Image (cartoon, rainbow, N blue to C red; front, side, top):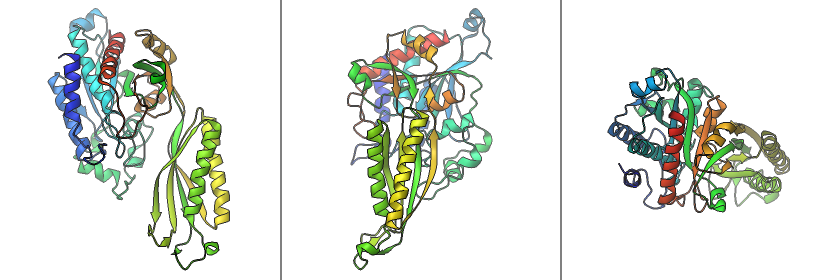
Length: 410
């Protein structure tokens, strides 16, 4: 299957799944219809390549291309030797872009086609994988599938998570026809993990190159801020008599922006919930989620503490109260430097940091040597319907991934 034709055909297959007719963005929520359709598509694509997919009890998937016995013997290796896993995820943020996640899955399949067209046979197992609920957009826990298989999060904890509609994660998994009691994906066979991903920034654009490798992931996390006040009438309550949590939240959002700008870090309040959410009522509760990222663990802690401190000070003036709860916090991840340098030499690719979280970071933190391949994003826009990558750059990414996988499985 020619690289271009195969890649573009797969991309056309995925394009309509979960796409909003109004915004053009994607709603591929885990354990819901669109994401389930994509996981079924992955099974079909692997079957077309003679690969059998194993799906674990929460929906993580992997298919292994096993070495031919003659190749394995020539390399003096056994079936117990660790393999190389590549892949990404198929879920999206709310109203997200087409490339974040699926590009890595489609490119993994296309890279297998390239390797076979080259006549290459791996001498160690090569796996194609899909992790579920990477974005955390439904249940608030980023990289949940990979966290579960590495033990960073337990099923006992995860099953109690609720989505915006109050649905328990355990119920959502069961409704999708999955049974966690059958077990989770084993990483015993994984000696190295490689994830291809669209770049979520402009580093490669500024360098004028199509492909790069990752050096590190900034530490990042989500914190829930619960601002509590007193519900009251919007017309009859004098301004000086109010205990309005919306004011406390508004100042906190401005403080987060200022603190991040001053320190060169990242802070975003992108989601809020208001009670009672009435136009003519002072709210009783505003819940807001802070996404914060920084260049080091200490810088992240300093940033979040500065925001919390200013929020507390403002709450005292507004007559409101504040509770801050950390959710889905990930420390800094430095990818295997020797591995990155070895792979970068294959194509003279730059090695760059990223401020976005990925399953690769979870596997790396679990002690698995990990690398990431980035494909240029011409605008740098991500987590948006405007997210994009040129086909020529995507194909360059497929060829680069094939080169990397050949190097690691020869």
